Structures are given as structure tokens and as C-alpha cells.
Image: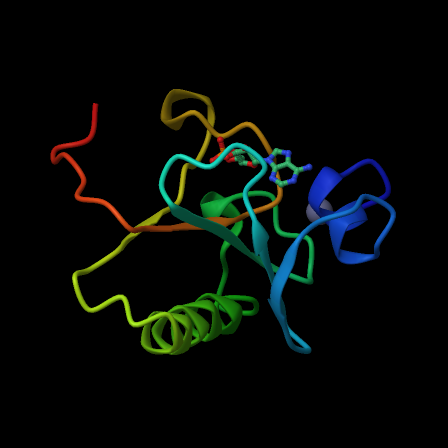
Length: 113
Ligand code: AMP
Ligand code: ZN
């Protein structure tokens, strides 16, 4: 999608601090980190939000969680981490290209506000 910020990050039109990339996903540092480690995991295919996951495209979500597991091992996140997906306005989604926040390096409150 030509007017999507995260599609522009994937194709290099907008700079980002890349952490990991493969044929399906791109991982980069959040520009406004909410924790010592705050990465965004996005599919290379444009999917607007979690409500647009279907039988045809859901494989990428499983793949993203595989990547999260590998990153957690590589980063030695043995004290835990949080994965967040905000879907839609009430959840505070601001970029409408589905993304999963990987947050770590501190302890988190629950339930979230
Ligand atoms: P959300 O509020 O769940 O839609 O999350 C969007 C996230 O994208 C926020 O945490 C922003 O800080 C982050 N963000 C926005 N623009 C950029 C950018 N150019 N590079 C990296 N992260 C960004
Ligand atoms: Zn996009």
C-alpha cells in the first residue's frame, strides 16, 4: 500500500532500525520505546489489522510468533516479555498495518489500562 507507513519501512522509503528480516516478516525498533526492548514485528504483506486475518493469510501470524520465540532465546529474555497487538481505535491502534509489539526488559502491569 503506497500510503502505508509500515509498507514504506519494509521497502526502505522510510528508515528504520532493522532487527530481523525474512521472506515473510520485518522486525524493527519502535521509534518511541515503551520498554528497554521494544520491537515491532510486521508481515511484509499489507494486512490492516487483526480483524483482517483470514484462513488465507493467518500463517504469517504463526510465523511471527516463531520469530518472537527465536528472538526471545537470542536476547535471553528468560524473565519474560510481553506481546501486544492493538486492533482498532479503542485499542489505540495508530498504524493500520498489523503489527505485534515485543516488549521486554522491565516488569509490566496487568490488567493493562
Ligand atoms: P500502535 O499504537 O499499536 O498502532 O503502534 C504503532 C507504533 O508504531 C507506536 O508504538 C509508534 O511508536 C510506532 N511508530 C510510529 N512511527 C514509527 C516509525 N517511523 N518507526 C518506528 N516505529 C514507529
Ligand atoms: Zn502496509
